[in-house]
Length: 420
Image (cartoon, rainbow, N blue to C red; front, side, top):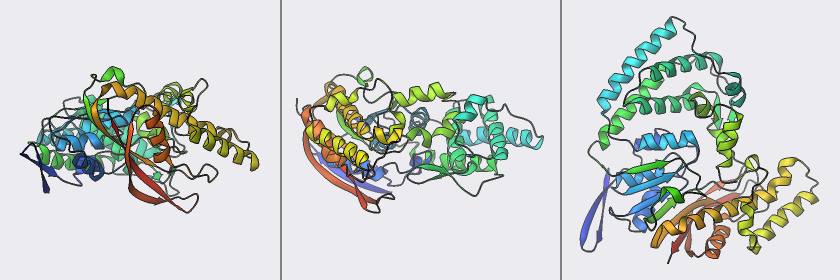
């Protein structure tokens, strides 16, 4: 552990920074932005304990956890139900770790007995099965996982959500056949049997250790809201937010609901195709898999020439290459819908920011739209300026190798401020 001391108005503020506090690993999206980046901008913006931070694309709560560690009140907005659930649990440090372990151990004994007696859990119905990626989990691990989940849900207590979150993590990373790269896929080597109970219990033990680290650490509020970042006004008080630190989806072909499909279905957050569709509709349009008839966010950037020109260039390249599939025909529209959705978000946010509010948006360039580069941070900066924000700079966060073009792609932090 290390401490950072800052001064403001003559007062010293001591803050505890554990760069890799394991709470971040309770559950997180693959390739989510790291805790240290949030810490860096808390310091850079000089955020104090009497201020409020918002993460409008909160994911599994990286920003909220970091703020809570530092005694800073925060709000998060996330529309993916399992991610919002994870964020809520990861910022609940009020339970007793020892009591959690005792409760989970009793559940493990029940589940082990039911597995030994070869009890049959309630199976997934046809709608649920259709939603899952084929072969994402083998039959025996699935059966055991469902038995464990039934035991968890049969003994609800103040530890229930922590137990379900540990289950969700193990379901994906230990029980399933899933593998993660640029997109989620299925491993060739299938897991035909897994020690479901003990893996879950080991994860509970890790939670207990983490909770011990923070039991006297912070009592400040961190609130996770299940909402669309383009329509967050009803969740916030006007002129209440001092800072935004967030990482929205990038404009690419990554379907974020596919990445979390297994746990959303198994834990009962999404039951059928219609509910999946509604979840997708509440997401920023960042890929061709969640574009719907009636989408009109592109109108928000109809007067930003650089975006219109880039979309036209992409469509012209598609025609030149004679690409005629449905998703390829949508590429140029996704670009406009993405930046239009971000414009809508930034406009909706303005009344709830304080005068002089500081904002940091972590975004990545894109190069797979027929290999035509999309400079996301620069274009988003133009969008922000068009609706009254000031661009204070663009920091390089990291470079990653594109599997499509074999070139390095920049991930950057767009820095904005709002002067009212």
